[in-house]
Length: 315
Image 1: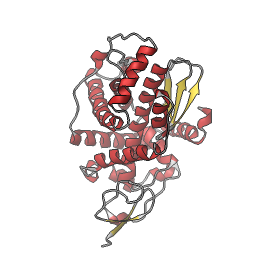
Image 2: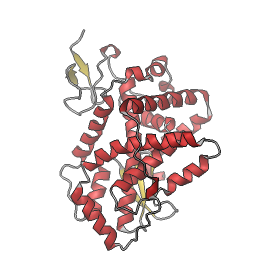
Image 3: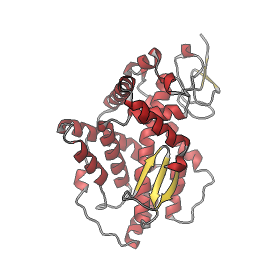
Image 4: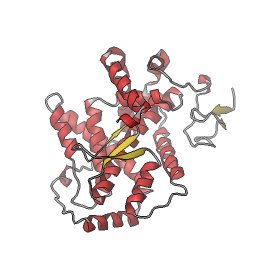
């Protein structure tokens, strides 16, 4: 048996003793019989017996999720090297730019939105709400990145546009959409002053799906979203420390925004343990994969999402 393994992200040769790639920090596979990592460049490549089989919790080692979070942290840390900021808003945009691209929008009711690694922020907002919205949308990006990194590990594939598109497709189910939105609101709420928490888009999603989803399932999605939010908050804490949080509080005072306190009651302390979290995430991906195979209408959705990745200027 070979004593070496190739990183599925950058291709550098590593020792089997390494958990992370010596060059790029990506989590290393320890199953050497798969050989060179694959690059998925089309929708058809996604469907294979091997890919379907690997969407099983038994292939997901207990420490891999933590390693994935470490990879995401290293990406942000490297992206912030030599970055300077003239004010608090630029400090936040520097963190965002370490992970995704962003730009302003000038119309529409949303404060901001996230599509295809791109964040759009309404230019009419005051600084406080710009900061809160960027944190919220960056949480959406990290949520998506977690799923993509899980697929990269299970399938031994490199990052590619088609893999990112597929990750988006399989995480678009109603329950994961609710979990994703609750997660983003909870992450945002951690870094803004007490009383300014707002779960508006989460409430809108719950209203939209309430006829088709039982309350118990919605509560499950909330706990799953809160579980992932805890992981993302721990990640963001490394970039948005106590000093920056205090300055965010001062910015709210400068902008003379009044707290409402009415939606902070939607916060919960309930979370799943790490084994439950991992099993639920793999199960969602597996079910999404099966749905994608069986529903040809999702092909059009896939193609539309891919168009956004290829041409983000049209978003």
